Length: 395
Length: 91
Image 1 (tube, each protein chain N blue to C red):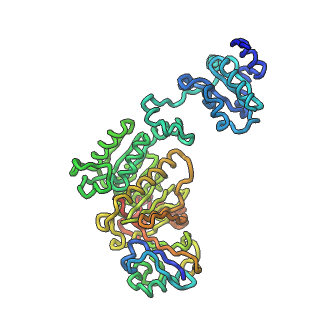
Image 2: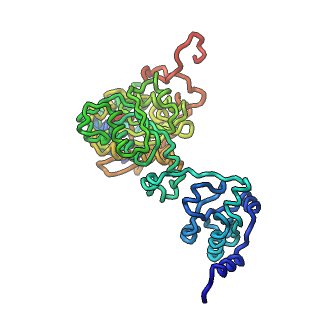
C-alpha cells in the first residue's frame, strides 16, 4: 500500500498530541524534557533555553540514554512543527508515555519573544580536532567549551610540567601560563619532552611556548620567566582556575601552597624520586592542603631533588600525565578527584597504592582562624604576609 | 610480624630494603624494632625527644597515625606500616 506524505502526517497527528508554544513553555517549567530535534547547524543558531539537542536522525539511537524513564514528560520541537511530529511519533512507538510536539516550532517560539539562547559554537576545525572529546557525554561540546575557556598555570616546565602541559594543550585548555626561570639543559631532554635538542640554552618558557604553538594554535600561552617566590606568587597565580605544581624545591611548594589556599585555587600536586611518584589534588578549604600533609619540610639531606638523586625519565612522565588527568577532571567537574587521597606509584613494583589524607584542623595555612599566622620556626617557608607596615593591621 | 614499607629516600639506611619485617604490637614498638635492626634510620624518623618527625608521615593500612593513636596505634600481624617522607622532585 502506498502512503503519501499527507497520509503519514495525518497518522502522526492521530498518535501525537500537539501543544502551543505557551503550553510547551509551561510544561518545561514543570519539569518536562524539551527536545530540539533539528540539525546541528540549526541548533547552533539558537535554541529554546533549557532544551537538549537530539537530532531527528539520532532519535531512535540516543533517546534511551537521554531520557531513560519512559514516563518522563517530553516536549519535542523543530523549526516549524512537522519534523517534531514525526520524531515524537517515533518516541510514542518506543513506549514513551507522555510525548507532545510543539506546533509552530522554534520559529514561533522566537518570534513570540520567549527565552532562547545561542550555544557555544566550535569552529569546524575545532570540531574535528576535539571530536574524540565531543563523543564522550561527560565532556561533549559544553565540556570542551569549558576547557577552551579555562586558564591553567604550570609552575615549572620540567619533568612533570612537560607531559602535563603537552596534554593539557592538546586537550584544548584555552590559556596556559608557565612559570620557569631556567634554560634548557642537555640533561633535561631525557624526560622533559616539551623541549628539543636544538633548543639547549633556550629559555624553557620560550621552548615550551614554541612546542605548544606547534601542537595546538587554540592555546594562548602566557610566559612568566621568573622564579616563584613569596613576593610575586599572589600576582602570578591570580586569575587562574587551576595550578600544576611541578617544582623541585620544598620552598616553592610551601610558598605556592599557602598562596593557593589564600586565593582558593586548586593545585594538582605531584613529586617524583627515582622510581617513585606521589600525586594528589589540593582543593583549598574542601580537602587537605600541602601543609596538612607535610607540616614541615625535611632537612635537605633527606630530600634530594632529581638533579642529585636521579630519576627514571618515564616516572615524571607517568605522574605528569596523571596530573593532567586530574586537572581535566577538576576543570570539567567530573569523576572523583584525588583530593584527600595520595596516590603512590612504584615503577619497579609496577604498583599503585593509595593513602588517605586528612585536613589538619591546626594547619597554619588552611586551619581555622590561623590563615594569616606566620610559621615562626620555618624561616624561608613562612607564609606570605602583606608587606610590613607601621600600623600593624595584619599583625 | 608486621611489614614496614621503607620509602626510597630511606632505603640506603635500611640495607637497601623495600620492606622490613618487624615485631611489636604498636606503631612505636614496630618502629623501635626497625631501628634495632637499622639504627641509622633513627634521626630520620624520630626527633630528639622521641616523637615522630613532622616531615615523615606514618600510615597503618593507609591511615595516618597522627589521626589515630600516634605511636600507640595498634598494629597486627597482617598490617602494613608505611613510612612516607615528603619528596620535592619535579624536574
